[in-house]
Length: 182
Image (cartoon, rainbow, N blue to C red; front, side, top):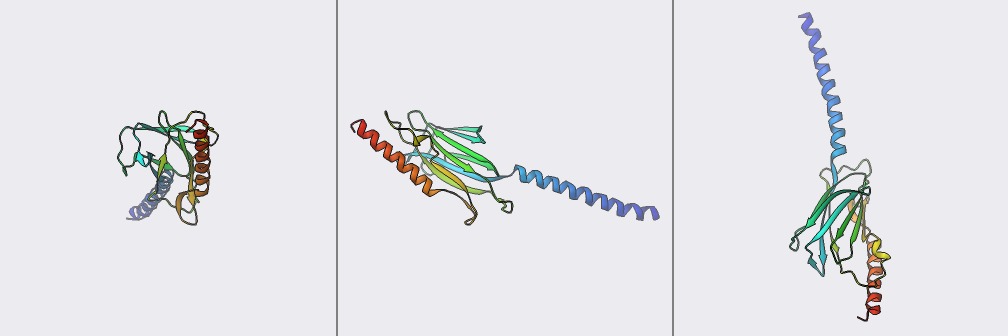
C-alpha cells in the first residue's frame, strides 16, 4: 500500500506535466499553421465575370499557388486563398490581351488578435484590355492595398490609395485614346 500511495501521485503529476507541455506545443504548432485570412476574389471586365484568367499567389515574393479560371458565373467566386498571419502576399490576376492587375495584402496582426475563425475579405479585380501606346507607369502599381484595421477589427482596402491609382489609370487611358484618335 505504501508503494501504491507513493507511485499514484507521482504518476498523476507525470501525466499532467506531460499532457500540459504537450498541449502547449500543440497550441503553438496550431497557431503557426492556422490561416488568419480567407481572401476571395473574382476577375471582372465591363461588369461581367472574365473567363481564362490566371491568378497567382505570392508570399514574400515567392510563388505559392496558381489557379486558372476557365469558367465563372456572376457572384460565383473565381479564386480563393487562405493566408497565414504575419506575412506579406501579392495576388496577380492576368489574362492574355489584358493589363495584369496586382493586389497586395499584409496579414500582420496585433498579438492579442485571435483569427479563429479566420477573417474573410472579398473583392473584385477589374481587368481592361491593353491599349497601344499607353503610358504604363501606374499600371505597375498594385490596384489595392489590403491590411488589418485595428479600430474596425476587419481587413480592408485603402480606399484613397485605390481611388488615386484608378484615377491615374483612367487619365492614362483617356490620353491614350486621344493619341490613338479614338
